[in-house]
Length: 156
Image (cartoon, rainbow, N blue to C red; front, top):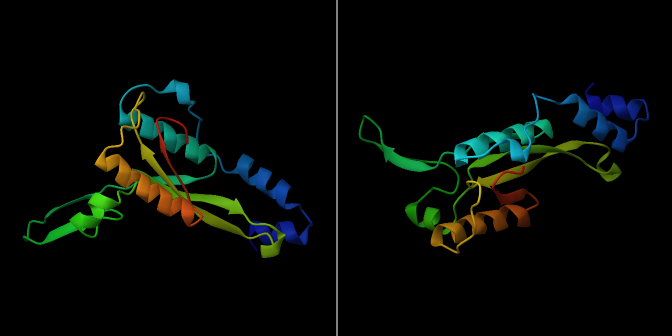
């Protein structure tokens, strides 16, 4: 029996179960947005801690291409199947899942919502570059399909 089944058996409300999960799934100390200053790597670390505090999990999405020692050429990272695709749609720095408690229509199941965060250094501003437009395309695709994607300089 999982937690959702137990809650249904004992008539625990969906709201109470969601609150319990928020209290129960804590990975470590929260880091406030103002506690971290500096380069993108530090902002990324803060966002990952905030996500964990909120019950979500984010992982680094490294994107690139190169040759292996055996000479084989490979590409890695989401939306990097070809150079053309990568120029048009650039996946975010951090990707992961957030638990979402579904309404009674789905009998209290929890599903994972896809989460995507493009991390920028503190003080960054949008300049409508080709790269930024490609990042916004990725964000729009994820959000249109029910995910949660944004560009951030410090908040999860």
